[in-house]
Amino acid sequence: MKTLKLFTLALIMCSMASCVSWKPGWEVIDQGNTEGNPGEMLATAKKIELTADTKEEVEELIVAYEAVLEKDPDNIYALWKVGNYNILMGAAYADKKKEQKKYYKKAIQYCERAMYTNSGFKKRVDSGEAVWEACDELGQREIDAMGYWYTAIFNYFKDCLSPLGRMFNTRLVIHNEVIMDRMDEIDPDWAGGGNYFSRGIYYVAVPEKFGGSKEKAADYFEKAIETGPDYLVNRWGRARYLYSLTGNKAGFEQDLHWVLEQDPHKAGNPYPWNVFFQKQSKELLSKEGEIFD
Image (cartoon, rainbow, N blue to C red; front, top):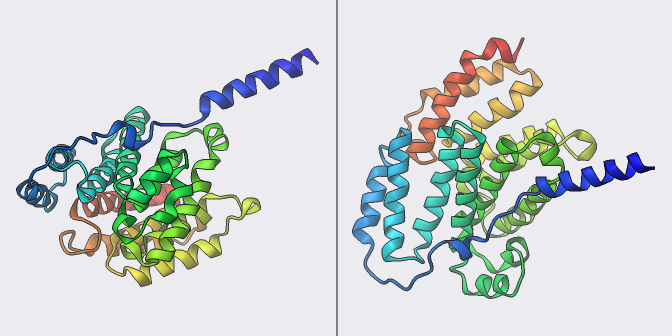
């Protein structure tokens, strides 16, 4: 009995230590009343975005969007852009989990701060409601912030947590579903099929006994491609997450070669992300023998 009690206590302590949390973005991102015309700074950031394809350049891009916020703290576009490119830093350029955690949490907080610019949402979260409880206040104006919020959380869950950590933090991805449902009400075709893509990954990642389904995943990836046929992310993701698992070598090769044949300046998704998808596609093809061994 004593051994059982000690095991139970250890499990509870492990659970507490494993739970992921962060301060809401509206508590940590500057909410000053600085007023100014950020137009020139915004133009500078957008110009950098057209060519940023290294870690240093993406960091410069983030700084450029942060400069906009120094003049206009409620600039929702700059807020979610900072969030989006912190996701890229974590996914493409972070060498260690500690770095990834930092970037993904920062992305989450900037997207939360972007959502907080909606007065109805602000009122409800200030009264104690969670993001997913108040998300019905959000609309088309906030949809990018919502989409990259759940993307950052999913990446944190996938890239930064151990299997035990995932077990104790399933609430993270469960709450994502509420946000995605709201986004479907606003714009089901968001970001070239972004929600379809994410649901495809979800059905691949979840064990069948908990609702996972490779067939459903295939359907959602197909819907994503139909919605955003020029978005590199859709075929890259299908090859990486589905075909590598199901053993579809021909589909794997076809999707990744298609990604590599596209012009990263003209394809769907911003240029810095397209560079990442193409780099990853090359790496996946180089490891094809290991994947399908």
